[in-house]
Length: 116
Image (tube, rainbow, N blue to C red; front, side, top):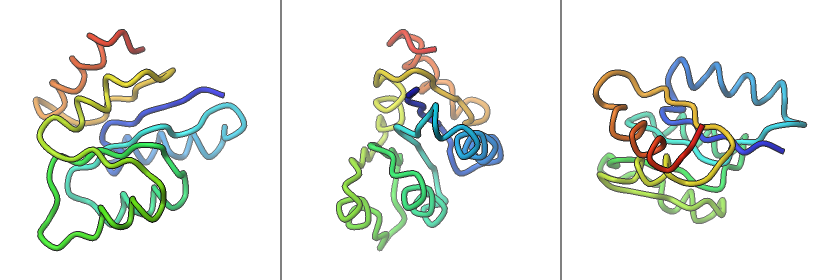
């Protein structure tokens, strides 16, 4: 079973990768996923795929994500370096789908950690 992390799991590229994981659920599983603002979609991903870890750089005021993750048994990484931390965790594949300069730091973290 291959463990996959998706950086930017709530966008279009993330959607496409999640579709692939659905098709190949016998060979790959979602280990970790990050999101920027779309917390509702992230919660849907958590419900469907049960990743071990999620990362969010900041939460909207009043978000119930911490309680949601605790109830689901999912580790929540939160804060400025959260996505970089997720990117550096050992998995079989990191999919970098955060666009532009916003995604550069997490990609560099994955590369430094020797991820593919």
